[in-house]
Image (cartoon, rainbow, N blue to C red; front, side, top):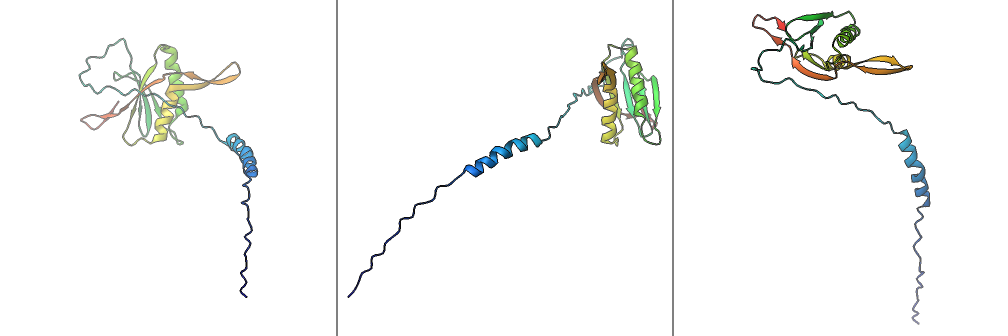
Length: 172
């Protein structure tokens, strides 16, 4: 006797996928990640580069083109017509940016309507020096109504190169 066995197939239903624990994790994780995120504040400084036109014509004596020439051993604040206003010598710690700030404050007191300045750089001037000079000529910290605020000096900054004359001496 051949017995045919009947196999009984058990019908197994697929288990339902429970996503509730995962959703609970997301509900907690997303706000925690958002709250722990560090928001950075990026400041953009608008720069105006000097015109490349060599035949710009004579300089109007009524206008003063303030310049800060950055050298390895000094910072020279000049009027743009060859006149040196102040030479800030380098100290043992580096450039004396505090004295540069004082010079800029005095110039702003004398010319309150003036907003532009040119920063002249040697070709090998390091980035941190450029940023420090630009920060010092743009504004300075002061106290107003018991709060430290940035007072504006010369916010319109142009960049240029310190030129070398035919005799080998550097000129701003």
